[in-house]
Amino acid sequence: MSLSLSRRAMLRDTAAAGLALSLAAGFAPQAVAGKRDPRWEESIQRGLDWLARTQSSRGQWNAQHYPTALAALAGAAMIGSGSTTTQGPYARPIARATDYLISKCRDNGLIGDPLTDSRYTYGHGFSMLFLSQVLGEEGLVDRRRELVDVLTKAVQFSGFAQTPAGGWGYVSARDGSNFDEGSTTITQVQGLRGCRNAGIPVPGEIIEKAKQYIYECKNADGGISYSSRQTGSSRPAITAAALAALYNAGDYDGEHVPDMLDYAKKSLHRISGEQQAYGHWHYTYLYYSQVVYRQGEAEWAPFRDKLYDRIVGEQKADGYWEGQIHPVYVTACNLIMLQLDKGYLPIYQR
Image 1 (cartoon, one colour):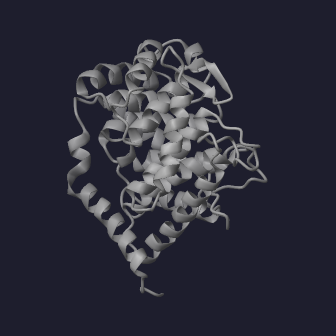
Image 2: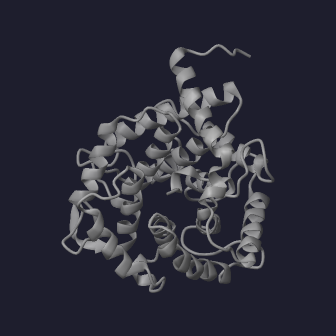
């Protein structure tokens, strides 16, 4: 086993280690605010146990569609509890999910399989997000180097996959004739931001082009369109996701943000009306909860209580939730939301 590192690798490792130290120094307790209902904690425990119980020995969750994305989201939900690849009750499932996603990294940097996944950019983006959170906690030098290599290639792939308009589609720009749309664009932006936070170089022009893409998709009512090719009709779900991505990109007070926030609040803050989410309620509130959390405790606490009570009330006896896509997807989204203000996932923090 070689422990020699290039200077560039050592610098990246130092950045990753710094993030780990900041977490160990008490980041999470500072992020937690307000009294938490014991029912929420019981629900989280049952949900996490179900995820751990249904994971295969290879680290994936057996699903016909989106296997890479599901593994990344489920892994992120477990990190949200405070476990890492080496510590905590879900260390083994997190480590297995990490191994599985590393095994899906291709020579061109894509994390996923274009032969079996017709919308592989979702898995790629969520994998960058999950693995970047793992990197910040990883203490083994060789393991960090492996993660750095995977994520460096993944960032490069995202840059190549970006369309001239600045967005991303379900597949790369080349494979998809430059088609792009909002939900996959947001997935890439958050994944790239996670990588940058973990010390992986991310070209600034990729993020700037993505921000401009979001601005170009903005309509007069403040909402964001589904695609740069289909402007004029606003989508509350994509607007919420776009706001979360802009916050990740450092745009908290830009000229477009107030209008977008106003539109999202009018459409989504009452936590009702599935039609506003176009059938993707859990996707919508995965992102809108991040937006509200960033507004501060006065906004977050009453919203959180309503959101969490609804989520807990819909949990099945075995610990999972049902809905669009797959139970693993819905369960992971709900668990990420339920643990948002615990502060163990840096990418979502204020």
